[in-house]
Length: 113
Image (tube, rainbow, N blue to C red; front, side, top):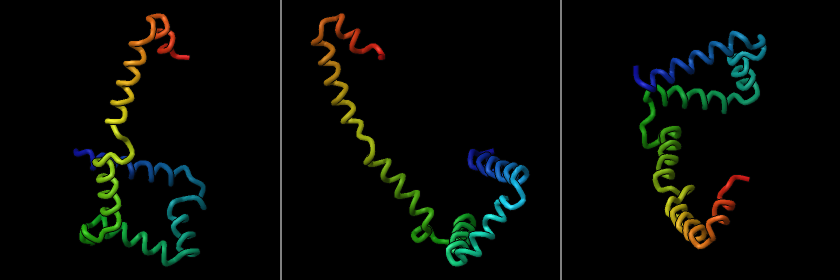
């Protein structure tokens, strides 16, 4: 069994478990119905887009779910949020700082507070 298959089984298990323990008016189906009554176009659109995404009914170039995750992966690859070279520079600075301190001060400075 692949990881994605395990994820689907886990998701189905959590949904079934939630629906079993939820109050009658708090089940997921009832929530979808409430949202459909208050926001019919948005709810139907989200359900339709999700269903079409899952069965491959939307080409990848215009699938909003695929495009969102592709953009997220692209940002991670470009490391916009985390720059290891900055960590490396900071690490070198800290090593130089600790090397210049007397031995007792370096131990005291590196000890957790």
